[in-house]
Length: 195
Image 1 (spheres, helix red, strand yellow):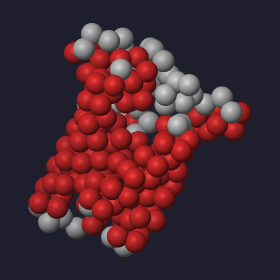
Image 2 (tube, one colour):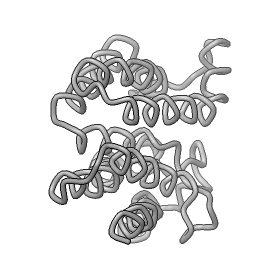
Image 3 (cartoon, helix red, strand yellow):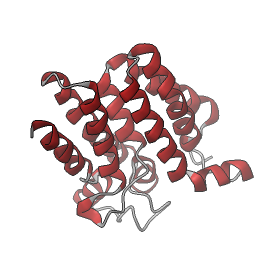
Image 4 (cartoon, helix red, strand yellow):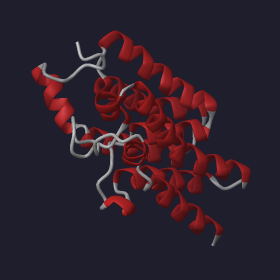
């Protein structure tokens, strides 16, 4: 019963759209109808600036971090870590509170990785920051960092359940970024700085 409660709670927490809540509180347009129409931190940055984007990023990351960190405190088995992490991630993508129309999940996935361990989350975040600095394209940085995430988990916490969870998250992220991938291949993907 405890494990099922953790999984359900993780999904419900993931279903709280930080982007929509932040934009409403700050009097900004609905991110689902502006910019890329994606309720995520990158789109909030475009329509609302750095402060709104930073709050959104923190909120989305905490949705993944808190339930997985709770698994540490409750000493749950690795399978429950994996199911809870996946539930939080899927809650962000398909939020029950917002018509199952959510973001692409990068920040929440990063929160899950930090919840597993600071070294894992730090490795993924460092990869994103490096690629963002080099390429100046958020989607490319996200895709590369998440493609490497299963490797980081394998090196730092070699759990079959956690590796499978991350591989599935990565595959879903690739699917959710398919329009970005098309733009990257065509050379038309927008940059972080807007230049």
